[in-house]
Image 1 (cartoon, one colour):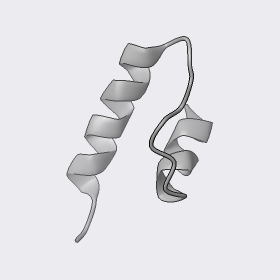
Image 2 (cartoon, helix red, strand yellow; image 1 turned 90 degrees about the vertical axis):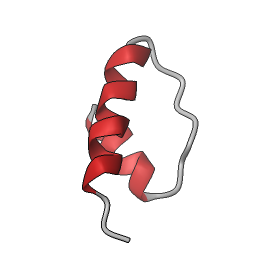
Image 3 (cartoon, one colour; image 1 turned 135 degrees about the vertical axis):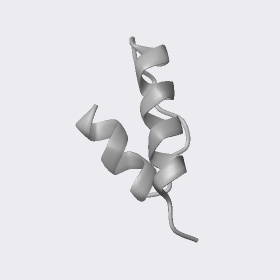
Image 4 (cartoon, one colour; image 1 turned 60 degrees about the horizontal axis):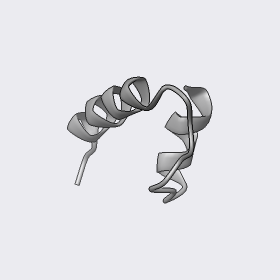
Length: 36
């Protein structure tokens, strides 16, 4: 999950993973914390 967390900061929007649901939850949580 650390790679997924860092990748979104680098602009990566597609990550091939086995635990897709868990990464989706992580991205949802992180996007709620983004400061515009």
